[in-house]
Image (cartoon, rainbow, N blue to C red):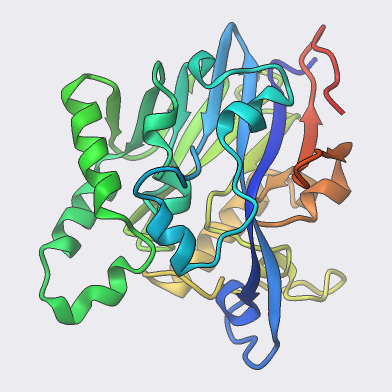
Length: 291
């Protein structure tokens, strides 16, 4: 019996992302639609968001223009599709500090946020580096850092130090140092609550962008391919990919990738009137379908 209902909620997209930015080495391969999404968990009396998107009505506008982000919708509308309001979010687990994953901090007024402590510390160090290194800040908004510090002052941002089991019931955090960012983390949901789960899902953040990162385009003879926009070691990224796949028993359906529209093909889904997809991965006992 599932302990959490799980929905992947598309809230924006980049219509013309370079394929080489998603799959390392795919040069001269044109562009692809890059959806933006966060994932909602509801169970154990808690409503939990994995990443929080961006705020296109505030300082996030600059990054919307920079990356040609289209079709952004406020979380009030996105979450409303499943009968949840931003005020009802109890926890937000942040996989990393890029603008499209941590830019919506101000949109969830009652939430407690969780991020790897060393992730924030690394970005502060990078911000203090000489201007010659500014490429490293290409997808990170200093305004988000300021908001995070203020949340910490208010006791609403918790720094996580490394791997943690049961950070919330049946939810584990696994750190992936020196991969997509300095201290990205991914989220393991043991949806049967068992220590050795037979119903396990992993939310990857940006450690994986596409199924091609998992199988290289040849599912029958798979090989790992790093994504095209990471700031650490590709070797470590591939080792983490292998760790993720082993945890889910090599079942690609159980790898929840926020930037891959194929999620809508693997599970029941529907398209909203704003043109966003809503994917229903699992339903807890007694929870009604939203698709």
